[in-house]
Length: 325
Image (tube, rainbow, N blue to C red; front, side):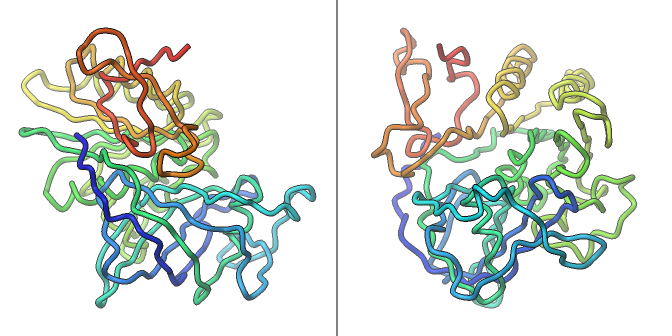
């Protein structure tokens, strides 16, 4: 469903915190929390673009989190000096009103020069962002007995805002999170390691995801946590346990190959499924035409192009032409 929202604008944001949530040295996951004016509003599924061509006014060293302390970490020399020119798109992992202002949360992985620079921002630094972007957001069918979230890697970040809202509605939630290794799971270890950790002191993004609210399954490629294998294999097992009388809704975000398998399995089971696509969105406003995808034509004859940034990023999984060649 397209909402055709037109409240995008340039906003100034103050960094509240910017810290790793994983201890891995290889491309750690970070949680960035921002303070914005209350005029900033968004719906689950929308995204923002952050300007990171300018470094923070105060120089910070790249850091990682180990044993409860911040320690320096090393980046590739050829990336350390590069200046990212384009804004970077990020899903909104959470959005809430706190003490009269809007607090936005962003989960990201340190990958290259842009996110390296983003990881250097610290509390009280300022960032410029553009948004909210995207006109098609997550929706809920009229009757749902359970919702299933499937996140591949950092794709999970695009589902957390929606997940928290559905938990507040009292809906039963199953979450399937996949990553190459345990260190790269984009969730605090308290949530997925034996499900016995205290979640009360976690960020608002994660505090509702305890075992009383969410059935959480984890898959890792190397078997270092949860199921050894692909997240799609765990999803198939979850879907096979669906009682015939229940109506489920599936929401997924992650790599294209993963989403294609999720979409096909949900379609075969006649289960409502929406996907949030991770196409490269350079401008965010449809000008560069870099994020086109094929979808089934509105007249049900053939296919047509749609822009992920302005006509997405959320799509009914049945409308996407999954074999894009």
